[in-house]
Figure 1 (cartoon, rainbow, N blue to C red):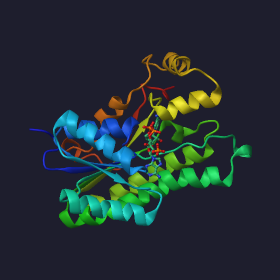
Figure 2 (figure 1 turned 90 degrees about the horizontal axis):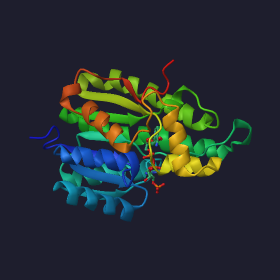
Figure 3 (figure 1 turned 180 degrees about the vertical axis):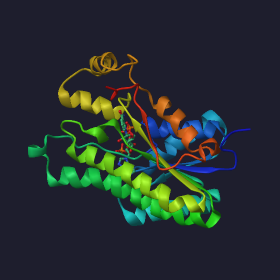
Length: 255
Ligand code: NAP
């Protein structure tokens, strides 16, 4: 018996990286999965890899979380095709890093749009089902960058905004059987951090080694580290945990 038997879990931005690992982990524990990503064929490909690896049902749905109509349509499609929705992981994300004086309005708007408005759009569409059935789990992806990071004024504002959003969801939705929490990853080896390596002109392995050396546990994180925390926070074992942000960062911001 799995912790997510008979649950339908939606993970945004799950064609790869942390989202994919989370979708796979939830499927391993019994959930039916909806992989949402910008490109429907990439989402469908990821969904079939999840289904093949775990034997559970998984569908891929093209969705731009920053677009209200697209987010609403995706949630309705999940409910129609999979028979309900119980868990929402707001994972889709982008970076448009630059020092403030070089950051364009578009860099600002697109990052705030995907992370903050995207989480708002998806949560608003899902919560009406959660409240009606008096059950739901929401997990939002924050970041250690919420605490401030050079070149990421847009991203850190969005990721700290996610923490406030999460606390408020905890307050508003708690009476309706809905838990809302956030994970704040440190350095996780994905295409997102590989792109940062390229931006600063370092080979990926060297960049990861430097991040590992600077970390108290002397390694980088992997998508599976975040998936494990996500599985706990979205399980009924965490039903007395809400409005919280769990830093999963190898102690990166200690001291
Ligand atoms: P990733 O490998 O870049 O994957 C992100 C996924 O989100 C991609 O498949 C991307 O699709 C999709 N996406 C982007 N914009 C979208 C939109 N508007 N609607 C739907 N999907 C969209 O990123 P990751 O490293 O796994 O990060 C996942 C989450 O963790 C993000 O919220 C990120 O900010 C957060 N996080 C990551 C780290 C880290 O070190 N990696 C640390 C802290 C927090 P496309 O490929 O089509 O763009």
